Image 1 (cartoon, helix red, strand yellow):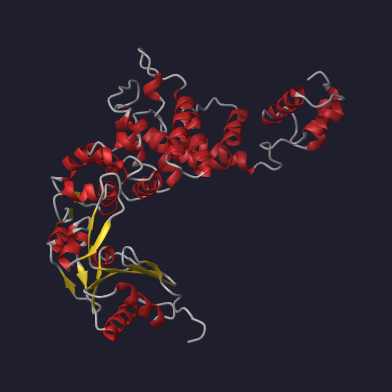
Image 2: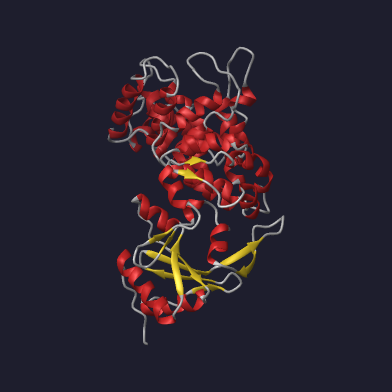
Length: 450
């Protein structure tokens, strides 16, 4: 056929090609799962899953790929599945199947099955809805009424559903937070009974972290954490956050540490690292709680707990470093007073660096989640920070190198060089030295014993 030329397909064109491919091979096939659910909810979902009834999903995938001028499918013969990648779409084909699972694995043994058997092995009834290639919906298990009621229910006993694939417990929480659905009454008790199945090797930390990411960037991150807690999954996924439950706070706080954390989380924008920082910003409080109600040093203890938690979940090093910095610095803007010198404001801008805007967003949420007086003080701080960032030349970056210091003072490498360089930088920050390379060297020449 020559070189394949991929084309961009609309939803209608995609279904038209699927219909042609299944008609050519004489097989019955349906779109199933999230694509159908989201179409009925009026949400975009570009990646249809196609279940083949009494036929060969691999052959259908191959023929569809030819018609769509796509590359050859990626096939998984053990599971009878084929994936076809198109611009803007990933189409997966699967033969109707039943599955059975060993107790220590979520990799199934697979056998051919009827269409209804295939649907009953799926996670939730709202994901069992079928759509033919003309857009007509077929409902075998009551998924449409659950969709209309906005409720997540498992097609079989949830203990069986979660035993087959424990990741479905996290998916239930994620769907609830993404879609605003309620959980059927039997789901949380089943989670509590099956929670130990979430641990590796049954569920990898990467899969757990991926679900957590999607929960936290959903429209309802607070709901996600509340449901994880109600299902006793939070102690498995993030024991550092679960430890905040019941830790009392005094002063301007209106809730315990856990309750305050939830209030902070729902007040930050939908940025992953910012929401991770909001979730973890006070995890150092349980370990630092004193009889007088103080939590001295909790920001530093919390930063290290945040680091270990995110390393355990294998977040990227960049994400970890950003969250740790935000947790470590989160009190600085909260404690701002009008009496701060310009040098103190510059130090905050310098220490936060590129994360300054994230830090201020976290501080605003932290203050709003408490009864702090004068929340407008952060507006004043914001204005002063903007003025500092506009200063030209900037006073925030060091203006001399270690080599400059060694030449000017006549010393060799060693900690004294770093000390002098840092002292010069502090004097620039405080406005004692003009922010130019020459002014700093001139000052050093006049103060050789600095």
